[in-house]
Amino acid sequence: MKYHTTNYINTFIEVAEDCPVSTSEIPPEKKIKTLANLQYEKLIQNPYQYSSDDIVFESYVIKNEISESEKFSEREKFFSRGQPCLRSSPLAKRYGFGFHHNEQGKVALYPVESGEYQKLIQNDSIKKVKAMRSKRK
Image (cartoon, rainbow, N blue to C red; front, side, top):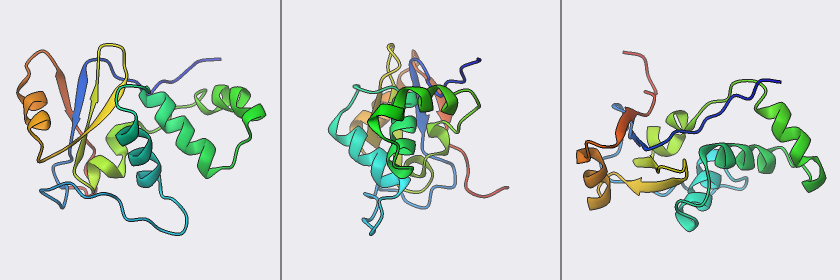
């Protein structure tokens, strides 16, 4: 079975061109946690500890209430078809956060207004890609 990954190596995902905020915002809490809430909590508390695949899959597990015993087989099924990567995350499209993937493919979150974000943008040794736009041109 083919494995489709969402991981990047040594790459920075910048906020989307049409991101509505110039200063990052923490996704608002709702009764049921949104994808943005789940990703934000995991990444803000654990920088460079998880790959993109880990973040995307764990969010899926929580949203779909998959048991611990089912996780291994569900992960294989989940990545047997293509999945949206963090370029499509609401954190980069709506809330003003960039994602840095290090040399090991582990991810950290950076607010658009931070000095670290600007350093990553200016670092020529890191590949840059924009998050997906929310609206067509």
